[in-house]
Each structure stands twice: as C-alpha cells, then as structure tokens.
Length: 300
Image 1 (tube, rainbow, N blue to C red):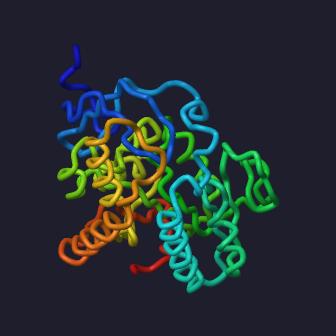
Image 2: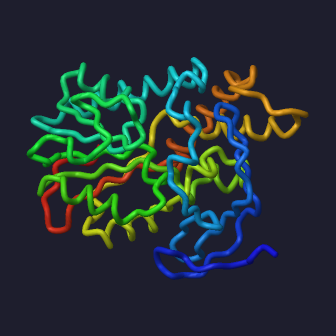
C-alpha cells in the first residue's frame, strides 16, 4: 500500500504523495528502474523520491551515462553552446580559480581551460583522471582554495548532501562563491507535465529542490544566498514533450525521437517566454557565499 505522506528531510514538514511509481521515460539512457514514488513537502517545496536509495551511486548509472554522444547531435550542440556562454561570462572575472564539482566527462573543464580560465574538475566516477580532472579530493592543488565552486546539475544527484557541502566549504576561499544550477521543483513546467517532466530523471535524481528548500540546506551548512538567476538554453520542456510522445509508442526507442528537433524548437520558445514573462524556467541558478564573507560575483 502506497503511503500518502512522509516527513521532509530538510524542514521536517509533511510531505504528500505527488506521483506514484515514477518511471524513467528518457531514451538516451538504458534504465528500467521502477518502484520510486515522488513526495513533495507542503512547506518548503522539496520533492523527494521514496523509498530512499541507499546503495552506491555508481551502481545506479549505466557505463555510458557520461557519454554525450547518447543524447544526439542537437542536444549535444546546445549543451556545448551553453558551456561556451558560461566560459565567456566567467572570463569577466579576474584571478579566479574554479572547481567544477561533478565534472562528468570533463568537457566543460577542457573548454574553460582552453578559454584561459584556471579550472579543475572533481568527478568521483571518472576513470580518466588528468592533472585537471581528479576523482579524489586529495589530488586537488595543495592550496585547496577555490574562488568559485560550480555545481551544474549535480546537487540533485547526491544521496547524502551534508558530506558534499562540508567538503565544498573546506576548499572554498573565504570570499568564494558556490554556484548551483539545479531543476526547480516549483517551476511551471513541472506542474504542467507532472510525472512526465524531463527533470524528474529517476533514479539518478534523488530529490528536486525548490528555491526555499535549497536555501535552507545551504544555510544549515554555513552558506547564505546572494543571488538567483534563471538557467539559459533549457531543454527540459522539449524532453518533457518527448516523454509524452513516447506514451503512444508500442516499444521503447533508444535515443531521441525523429521529431525531437521540432519539439526542441517548441520547448526553447516556451522556456524563453517563461524567462521573459515570469523570470522562471525549469531550472534555477543560485549563488551562495560563506556566512559572514564578502561577495565576489555581482548580480547578472
């Protein structure tokens, strides 16, 4: 019997059943995982999946999860464009050392390094370590002080939050900034697409934050919010539309559907309209500093 409520791990508020038996609808990864249900806190807006996953994170990911080639040329091209824009934005900062926490296949670290930024990557699941990308924190530079720690669609993958946040706090410079981009549990697209929302992404996403719940988590770990922006070039609406189309198919299809380019255009137009009208898209980008430290990055 499916429980109708549970307790929020962040604020101890009451969580109510949102979606029962959520399944992964996406075609660019092989995943038959099922049995998770989504609950949302009535107070802080956090979405959690139950039963909570207790096994090693590495066991939940297929071997080719970090391979961008699985996502198709259009999907990959837009990811590349978003990275180029991010590198250009960060180049306006002076004498900044950046840690890409959860650097995946290392594409952004490579691009940023070639663009002249002082960047290191930390990815615990990678086997292709280099001088710039490590899978062990002890292999980072001796100074262990970064003026910017970047988590780009990473924090929603953590099973245990506190060890990661304390690790980040230890290596962050006193005046440093933590920049977190993550799906927005209170977004219009999540409410519209429901269980077919592209950012549910079970079982790889263990929780979906609202601005209120993420701020509470960071404050409990010794950070304070200094800025919020919306995430550009968001593909979530297109993936959500594709998830709905997959319902009519008799069998699973590996990779994006042939109609994905059309869905992509529709999705990007919808996300751009939301960004313009309500300053909100499917994902949010929040910046935090250590409590009682000075800001390094001004509002965009």
